[in-house]
Length: 116
Length: 116
Image (cartoon, rainbow over all chains, first blue to last red; front, top):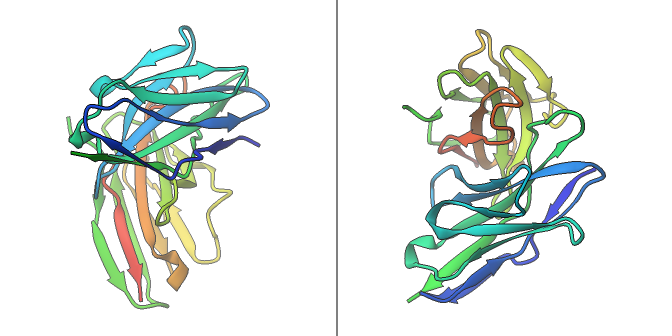
Protein backbone atom coordinates (compact mmCIF):
# COMPACT_ATOMS: atom_id res chain seq x y z
CA UNK A 1 0.00 0.00 0.00
CA UNK A 2 1.14 3.49 -0.75
CA UNK A 3 2.06 5.94 1.99
CA UNK A 4 3.49 9.41 2.35
CA UNK A 5 5.88 10.60 5.05
CA UNK A 6 6.50 14.20 5.95
CA UNK A 7 9.07 14.02 8.71
CA UNK A 8 8.94 17.68 9.67
CA UNK A 9 5.73 18.71 11.37
CA UNK A 10 6.88 22.32 11.59
CA UNK A 11 9.60 24.31 9.84
CA UNK A 12 10.40 27.77 11.19
CA UNK A 13 12.32 30.03 8.83
CA UNK A 14 13.16 33.71 8.56
CA UNK A 15 11.77 35.81 5.78
CA UNK A 16 13.86 35.80 2.57
CA UNK A 17 15.68 32.61 3.64
CA UNK A 18 15.52 29.45 1.52
CA UNK A 19 13.41 26.52 2.64
CA UNK A 20 13.02 22.82 1.88
CA UNK A 21 10.05 20.74 2.99
CA UNK A 22 10.73 17.03 2.84
CA UNK A 23 8.45 14.34 1.47
CA UNK A 24 9.08 10.64 1.01
CA UNK A 25 6.67 8.09 -0.34
CA UNK A 26 6.35 4.35 -0.70
CA UNK A 27 4.55 2.54 -3.49
CA UNK A 28 4.92 -0.65 -5.45
CA UNK A 29 3.82 0.95 -8.72
CA UNK A 30 4.37 4.21 -10.56
CA UNK A 31 3.02 7.31 -8.89
CA UNK A 32 1.91 10.82 -9.47
CA UNK A 33 3.11 13.29 -6.84
CA UNK A 34 1.61 16.52 -5.59
CA UNK A 35 2.10 19.34 -3.15
CA UNK A 36 -0.94 21.15 -1.82
CA UNK A 37 -0.99 24.27 0.37
CA UNK A 38 -3.60 25.09 2.98
CA UNK A 39 -3.86 28.61 4.31
CA UNK A 40 -5.64 29.12 7.65
CA UNK A 41 -9.35 28.34 7.48
CA UNK A 42 -9.19 27.60 3.78
CA UNK A 43 -9.34 24.52 1.61
CA UNK A 44 -6.36 22.91 -0.04
CA UNK A 45 -4.90 24.45 -3.17
CA UNK A 46 -2.65 22.68 -5.65
CA UNK A 47 0.89 24.05 -5.56
CA UNK A 48 2.50 21.78 -8.13
CA UNK A 49 2.42 18.24 -9.49
CA UNK A 50 4.66 15.65 -11.10
CA UNK A 51 3.03 13.34 -13.62
CA UNK A 52 5.91 12.51 -15.99
CA UNK A 53 8.80 14.06 -17.87
CA UNK A 54 11.22 16.47 -16.23
CA UNK A 55 11.85 15.59 -12.62
CA UNK A 56 12.05 19.26 -11.65
CA UNK A 57 8.63 20.83 -11.58
CA UNK A 58 7.76 24.43 -10.95
CA UNK A 59 4.60 25.58 -9.27
CA UNK A 60 2.85 28.70 -8.15
CA UNK A 61 4.30 31.32 -5.83
CA UNK A 62 7.91 30.49 -6.74
CA UNK A 63 7.88 26.94 -5.35
CA UNK A 64 9.51 24.00 -7.08
CA UNK A 65 9.95 20.31 -6.32
CA UNK A 66 12.19 17.55 -7.57
CA UNK A 67 11.13 13.96 -8.07
CA UNK A 68 13.84 11.51 -7.10
CA UNK A 69 12.76 7.98 -7.94
CA UNK A 70 15.77 6.23 -6.41
CA UNK A 71 15.23 7.98 -3.09
CA UNK A 72 11.44 7.94 -3.41
CA UNK A 73 11.36 11.61 -2.51
CA UNK A 74 9.58 14.72 -3.71
CA UNK A 75 10.99 17.59 -1.67
CA UNK A 76 9.54 21.08 -1.99
CA UNK A 77 11.83 24.11 -2.18
CA UNK A 78 11.70 27.86 -2.41
CA UNK A 79 14.82 30.04 -2.63
CA UNK A 80 13.37 32.97 -0.70
CA UNK A 81 10.23 32.80 1.42
CA UNK A 82 7.77 35.55 2.29
CA UNK A 83 5.58 36.04 5.32
CA UNK A 84 2.62 35.20 3.11
CA UNK A 85 4.01 31.69 2.57
CA UNK A 86 3.09 30.78 6.14
CA UNK A 87 0.71 27.85 5.72
CA UNK A 88 0.37 24.08 6.03
CA UNK A 89 1.91 22.14 3.16
CA UNK A 90 0.77 18.63 2.25
CA UNK A 91 2.54 16.15 0.06
CA UNK A 92 0.28 13.64 -1.69
CA UNK A 93 0.62 10.62 -3.97
CA UNK A 94 -1.70 8.76 -6.27
CA UNK A 95 -0.85 5.48 -7.91
CA UNK A 96 -0.71 4.87 -11.64
CA UNK A 97 -1.15 1.20 -12.36
CA UNK A 98 -2.29 1.00 -15.96
CA UNK A 99 -4.69 3.83 -15.23
CA UNK A 100 -4.66 6.73 -12.86
CA UNK A 101 -6.65 6.15 -9.71
CA UNK A 102 -7.18 9.77 -8.73
CA UNK A 103 -7.13 8.51 -5.15
CA UNK A 104 -4.84 10.86 -3.29
CA UNK A 105 -3.04 9.74 -0.15
CA UNK A 106 -1.85 12.69 1.90
CA UNK A 107 1.01 13.10 4.30
CA UNK A 108 0.45 14.57 7.75
CA UNK A 109 1.52 18.03 6.66
CA UNK A 110 4.31 20.48 7.44
CA UNK A 111 3.60 23.87 8.92
CA UNK A 112 5.86 26.46 7.34
CA UNK A 113 6.18 29.33 9.80
CA UNK A 114 7.89 32.34 8.27
CA UNK A 115 9.21 34.85 10.77
CA UNK A 116 10.15 38.49 10.08
CA UNK B 1 -15.75 30.19 -12.51
CA UNK B 2 -17.15 29.18 -9.15
CA UNK B 3 -15.11 26.78 -7.06
CA UNK B 4 -16.28 23.92 -4.89
CA UNK B 5 -18.95 25.19 -2.52
CA UNK B 6 -19.57 23.64 0.87
CA UNK B 7 -22.02 24.36 3.64
CA UNK B 8 -22.21 24.92 6.49
CA UNK B 9 -18.72 26.24 7.23
CA UNK B 10 -19.09 25.56 10.91
CA UNK B 11 -21.36 23.27 12.89
CA UNK B 12 -21.50 22.61 16.63
CA UNK B 13 -23.70 19.78 17.85
CA UNK B 14 -24.07 17.56 20.87
CA UNK B 15 -23.13 13.91 20.64
CA UNK B 16 -25.80 11.56 19.34
CA UNK B 17 -27.30 14.35 17.22
CA UNK B 18 -27.41 14.06 13.42
CA UNK B 19 -25.57 16.41 11.08
CA UNK B 20 -25.39 16.86 7.33
CA UNK B 21 -22.92 18.57 5.04
CA UNK B 22 -23.58 19.71 1.50
CA UNK B 23 -21.21 20.09 -1.42
CA UNK B 24 -21.58 21.51 -4.91
CA UNK B 25 -18.61 20.65 -7.14
CA UNK B 26 -17.15 22.65 -9.98
CA UNK B 27 -19.37 22.51 -13.05
CA UNK B 28 -18.30 19.72 -15.38
CA UNK B 29 -16.38 17.76 -12.74
CA UNK B 30 -17.78 14.25 -12.69
CA UNK B 31 -15.65 13.00 -9.81
CA UNK B 32 -16.49 14.09 -6.28
CA UNK B 33 -14.69 13.26 -3.06
CA UNK B 34 -15.36 13.59 0.64
CA UNK B 35 -12.31 13.77 2.86
CA UNK B 36 -12.03 14.06 6.63
CA UNK B 37 -9.21 16.07 8.15
CA UNK B 38 -8.51 15.61 11.84
CA UNK B 39 -6.60 18.27 13.71
CA UNK B 40 -2.91 18.17 12.80
CA UNK B 41 -3.40 15.48 10.19
CA UNK B 42 -3.66 15.23 6.45
CA UNK B 43 -7.00 14.65 4.74
CA UNK B 44 -8.24 11.05 4.59
CA UNK B 45 -10.60 9.86 1.87
CA UNK B 46 -14.06 8.84 3.03
CA UNK B 47 -15.79 8.29 -0.29
CA UNK B 48 -15.31 8.95 -4.01
CA UNK B 49 -18.04 9.27 -6.60
CA UNK B 50 -17.85 8.90 -10.36
CA UNK B 51 -21.07 10.63 -11.39
CA UNK B 52 -23.76 9.00 -9.22
CA UNK B 53 -21.77 5.87 -8.41
CA UNK B 54 -19.76 5.50 -5.23
CA UNK B 55 -16.62 3.82 -6.58
CA UNK B 56 -14.60 3.87 -3.36
CA UNK B 57 -16.26 3.96 0.04
CA UNK B 58 -13.94 1.57 1.82
CA UNK B 59 -13.01 4.18 4.44
CA UNK B 60 -16.54 5.35 5.18
CA UNK B 61 -17.79 4.19 8.62
CA UNK B 62 -21.03 2.82 7.30
CA UNK B 63 -22.65 2.30 10.67
CA UNK B 64 -23.12 6.03 11.17
CA UNK B 65 -21.99 7.75 7.98
CA UNK B 66 -23.89 7.93 4.72
CA UNK B 67 -23.48 9.89 1.52
CA UNK B 68 -25.43 10.45 -1.62
CA UNK B 69 -25.03 12.09 -4.99
CA UNK B 70 -28.38 11.44 -6.56
CA UNK B 71 -28.14 13.40 -9.80
CA UNK B 72 -24.40 13.22 -10.22
CA UNK B 73 -23.90 16.84 -9.27
CA UNK B 74 -24.15 17.98 -5.65
CA UNK B 75 -23.64 15.65 -2.73
CA UNK B 76 -24.60 15.29 0.92
CA UNK B 77 -22.62 13.62 3.68
CA UNK B 78 -24.55 12.65 6.79
CA UNK B 79 -23.53 11.48 10.25
CA UNK B 80 -26.12 9.91 12.50
CA UNK B 81 -25.57 9.76 15.39
CA UNK B 82 -22.47 11.90 15.82
CA UNK B 83 -19.77 10.89 18.29
CA UNK B 84 -17.10 12.98 19.98
CA UNK B 85 -14.44 11.50 17.69
CA UNK B 86 -16.23 12.82 14.63
CA UNK B 87 -15.02 16.34 15.37
CA UNK B 88 -12.99 17.26 12.29
CA UNK B 89 -13.05 19.29 9.11
CA UNK B 90 -14.98 17.60 6.31
CA UNK B 91 -13.58 18.54 2.93
CA UNK B 92 -15.28 18.13 -0.39
CA UNK B 93 -13.28 18.07 -3.61
CA UNK B 94 -13.97 17.54 -7.27
CA UNK B 95 -11.91 16.70 -10.33
CA UNK B 96 -12.16 16.06 -14.03
CA UNK B 97 -12.46 12.52 -15.27
CA UNK B 98 -9.42 10.34 -14.73
CA UNK B 99 -6.93 10.97 -17.50
CA UNK B 100 -7.85 14.61 -17.84
CA UNK B 101 -5.49 16.27 -15.41
CA UNK B 102 -5.03 13.21 -13.29
CA UNK B 103 -4.87 13.87 -9.59
CA UNK B 104 -5.67 17.57 -9.60
CA UNK B 105 -8.38 17.89 -7.02
CA UNK B 106 -10.10 21.16 -6.32
CA UNK B 107 -11.13 21.54 -2.70
CA UNK B 108 -13.85 23.49 -0.98
CA UNK B 109 -13.18 25.46 2.18
CA UNK B 110 -14.46 22.64 4.36
CA UNK B 111 -17.08 22.19 7.04
CA UNK B 112 -15.71 22.24 10.55
CA UNK B 113 -17.67 19.97 12.88
CA UNK B 114 -17.42 20.19 16.66
CA UNK B 115 -19.21 17.50 18.66
CA UNK B 116 -19.72 18.32 22.35
